[in-house]
Image (cartoon, rainbow, N blue to C red; front, side, top):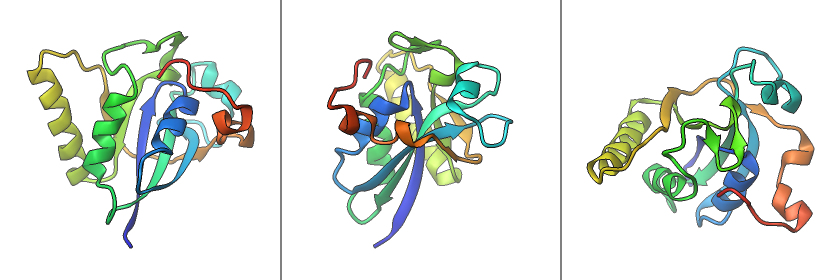
Length: 155
């Protein structure tokens, strides 16, 4: 079994986490922060918009069951990749759409999917950024919808 990790930012991490958890071959999804300059950021710091972090999910998956490419495609299906300033009602830098890639292969896969969307005359605001340190979000953010019994409102 080949376990890998992928990192996606698609608005509020609660909904992204919830939807990736439903994918066969995904073993764990963790909400957190990536892309900023402050060590050990808190939700309050990230929401201030000054840290440079995005709300991100870490997706742990079994490559023998689901491919990175499938996860990238799912990512584009579960959020509005054309929105520049956030996702739905969640506005701000921390809610931007981004794929954090680990290596050149992941970058090429992301670029290929983005190119396919653009060929269909779709606007793609999603950025692809090199992976940086992933900071796990506070415990009350983990499995949020399972804990509250509610459903995603902006995905």
